[in-house]
Length: 380
Image (cartoon, rainbow, N blue to C red; front, top):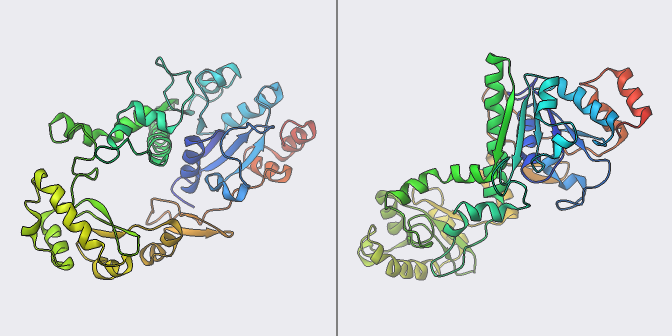
């Protein structure tokens, strides 16, 4: 059932970090009802519902939020909810009569979770943006990449999902804990720029202390060091190594047949380019499979660089059930894990049908009220 069994959340449908935050909470057992638009928004990447896996573990209803009856229905749901998730530009839900003041008046203990790129205030609050912009302005994108090359654009995991979804979920959980003792709800302003900056805390400390250069690709963890790098193998595939600690570094060198003296001083940045050339030549001498057989399962801090299909089949991830098959669609299993309130296997995303919508409302409204609203066309 998960540790959030009994927690009820209303998700106002959006794209990006909001749905993933709702998924995380639903994965942990919360009952989440998703309030979608009656007409397609034209946002995001359209796909068949079974592949929109961030919508798993919850059912949806379609409601016109500009219709007074639809807004009244949503406020009724909010009145029974513990938390709300929304990801619109600041002021949009206020104009629809569903802003924090409206919702907290209906439910004073509600935790009102808002996730945006720029935040609820500030000069850029009303501007459109995407992950690449949020990680740019916070200094993160400039720090990613190799020396002498443009910044490397990462997947939108850093901004949307780490800085956005995870911080929204964390904020909602903290708000729910506080509301248990105070009986009062509050607004959670989860700005991606704030979350991304928070994720950089350790690295900012290193930079401020003079232990991290401003030039990308020259530092310990950004491809500057030869012992924290990816190397091409004889078959054109790649392996990663990361033995920062001296004892692990020496174990790696022993196993691959390299004398540490040939690489110079591990801690001396001036010796890094030569060491990288030597290691690159060594790793090109065998295939990825051969290096994996030699190094995986040791303290050499090694892993093959796998694509997703290969990751699904890796023995360690298979043993842990890190990826699961849900109705024929592979996807990450819920995380983290709990010893007592174990998490269920995910339920595939539900089709947007009248039957599923009525079922979604069954835990929130009386059956007669659901039938009346369906007959009136308030939801679909």
